[in-house]
Image (cartoon, rainbow, N blue to C red; front, side, top):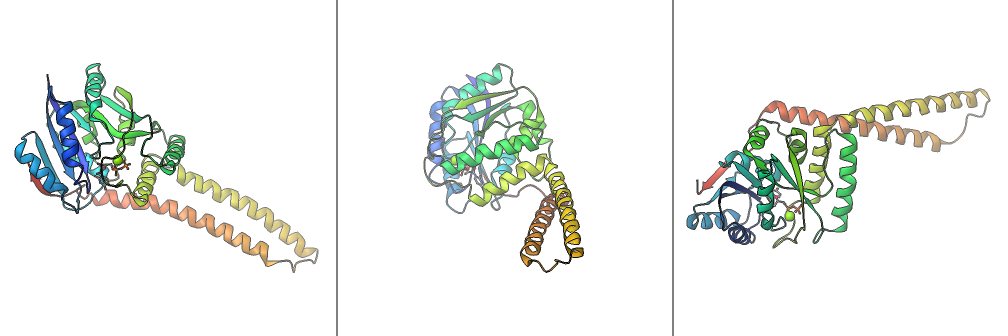
Amino acid sequence: MFEDLSIIIPAYNEEKNIVFIYEKIKAVLEQYSYELIFIDDGSSDSTFDEITKIAKVDNRVKGISFSRNFGHQIALLAGIKKASKNLIVMMDADGQHPPELIPDLIQKSCDGFDIVNTRRLSTKGIGWFKRLSSRMYYRILNGLTDIRIEYASSDFRLLTRKAANAFLKMEEQNRFTRGMISWMGFKQAIIEYDAKERFAGNSKYTLRKMFRFATEGITSFSVKPLKISFYIGLIALFVGSLYAAYAIVVYFLGKAVMGWTSTLLTILFLGGIQLLGIGILGEYIAKIYNEIKKRPHYFIKDECGF
Ligand code: UDP
Ligand code: MG
């Protein structure tokens, strides 16, 4: 019998999944004692009602409800803050992270690992676009930053109390959990699992949220995009000056009435590069702006079971 486990589950509009994941965890962890904390991330459906109902009949179940949708990564932070036990497992509400794996995660921590990460093996229920973009993305991320993140890794992991306390010391606003975990160090292990299809509902990571998450990952861990935009500018300047020299020669040869095509292309090309550079700058300035405001990461509107 294992005594000391907190399971934290962010849920955004997952009303049809709450009972399902609760029942599954209950069945798998029959031999364990644990607390189960749901973080309702500002759902507009009856997710929190479902959580409250379960919390009334099962005192291991607790819930907090955000005042609005703050996002998956922030919900994870809130869950870790609320977790009171010595081992903490974070997982999705939709059944894609199999609870059957939890005993394996615990076993690894008993083997002396502080952080046990997981990685999807099969990609059932994951479209070709997500698969391809994810593979490309982690290649770019690993190339641009000093952190290492495995392709197909997920926010299904175990933290020991020691690792969780370290994680909570990182107070940044822009939170890319898997990057921060990789950056932390400690003794880390990785376990592979077969991802299931979502039990009910659709992915809550819209294309927009995925894009945000992706740029967050890169700009939180690397300033190389700034340098790259500087180098592109340098190359453009060099090529531009060659072209200028050519134009002057042509002028003195008296053949200077040539086309606006080249002029237009130059303007468009340089304009594009400049906008790109300004855009990258903007991303970082926005980050600094967000950090210096030092706002709370989230507000809790409601609680149950605590
Ligand atoms: N989620 C959340 N806030 C959000 C988006 C997602 O708390 O703004 C939760 C969601 O309820 C789920 C987990 O984060 O438990 C992962 O989301 P999802 O399954 O939609 O992502 P996918 O598995 O498609 O990448
Ligand atoms: Mg999912």
